[in-house]
Amino acid sequence: MKMIKILLLGAFTLLHVFMISCTEDHSIEPQEDRLEITDALKSQFYKLGFDASDIRSEKVINPITQDLEHFYILENDIMISPKEFKAMLADLGDGPTTEQYHTWNLVNAPRTIKVLGYYGSGSNSTYLDNTMRTALEMAVQSYNNLNLNLTFTLAFGTNTSNYDIVVYRSSGAGGGMAGFPSGGNPYHTVYIQSGTSNYGTVVTRHVLIHEIGHCIGLRHTDYFNRSLSCGSGGNEGDAGYGAVHIPGTPSNTNIDMSSVMLSCFNSYVSGQFSNYDVTALKYLYSDQTPPPNATLSVSPTSVNFSNLSGSKTITVSSNTSWTVTDDSFWISVSPASGTNNGSFTINVGQNYQLCEPRFGTVTISGAGAESKTISVLQWGRSPQPGEICP
Image (cartoon, rainbow, N blue to C red; front, side, top):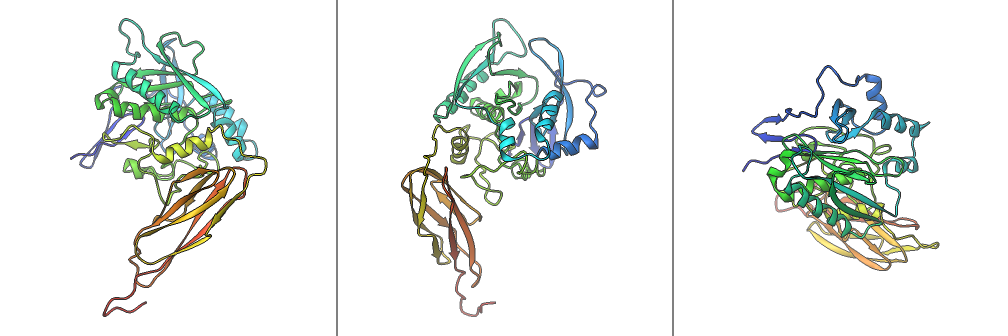
C-alpha cells in the first residue's frame, strides 16, 4: 500500500523515491514578478522563529478584488504579507519575550470568531464545493465541541464583510494555506486547494482544522523536524521566538504523530484532534482562571520500576488546573491534564539494556502554582546465563 504524504500547501504524492508536486495553479504569479528574497530577509525571518530555508514569494488572487497580492510563503503553508512582516519586526524590538510572542501570535479571548465559507449561486472557481462545505461545517463543530473561550460561527455566502475568517477554494492538487494572527485577531484568509476534495470529507476536514489552527496561533507539532511527518525537511524555527512549547504536550523527544497540526499528513488521517491537540487548545484558550492562591502538590515525588514495562499512579492535590509532561521517549503519562484534586498514571516501556538503569523526569505544571517534578528510575535487565554486567 502506497503512503501519501501531503504538504499543507500543494500536494506531494510519495511514489517510490520521487516527490511530485503540482504547479498548475492559476493563482500563482509569474516567476519574474516576485518579492525579492535576500539573505538579510531570511535572517530576519529566522529571528522571528521561522524556518526560512524554503521561503518563496507568491502572488495570490484576491477572490473579491481579483487583485494579485504579494505574500511570503514559509514552512509550506504559512502566508505572511510584507505589511504583516513589517509589523512582526516592530514587535520584535530588542528581543521578543513570550508575552510579546503571544501578543501577535494568539487571538484575544474570549470572543466569537465568525467564519464564512465562500459560496454562491452560479459557477466560480473560488466557491467551496460540496465536500468542502460539509467538511468546513464539521471542522467548525469540532472546535466548538471543545468548549473553548473562542466560539466559532459559520455561514456561507459571498459578502465577506464583518467576517473574521473567510475560506476560499483555490487551484491545486490538495492541501491548504493560511497565516498567523496579528493584533489579537485571527488570520483572515484560508485557501483550500480543489484537489483536496478528491481525498474525501475526512481528509478535507483535517486540512481545514489544521489551517484554522494556524489562524488562531498554532504552529506545526513537528516544527523542530519536519521530516517526522513529511519524510524530509528540518527545523522550522527557534522555540524561543515562533514556536513556544505548550505545557502538557510532548516535547521533541516524544512527538504526537496523531496531531492535526503535523506539517504533512496522509490519506488515512482521522480528521480529529488528538488528545494532545485538545490539551494545547484548552491551555491557550480556556475560560478557567487560576485562583489567587493556587496550590499544587503530588505524591509520590519519585517512582522506581523494574526493567519490565509497568505503570504507577500519582495523586495530585490541587485547587487549579494542571498539565503533565515527560522528557523521555520510554515514559508516557495519562491523562495529560486535570483540574483540582485528581490522579494520573506514569507508564514505562521495557528496558532492554543490560544492567543499565535509565532516568527521566515528569513535570506537573499548575495554573498559577509552582510546578512539581517526579523522578523516574527504571532498572536495567539482569544478566542471563553467560552474560556479565558491563
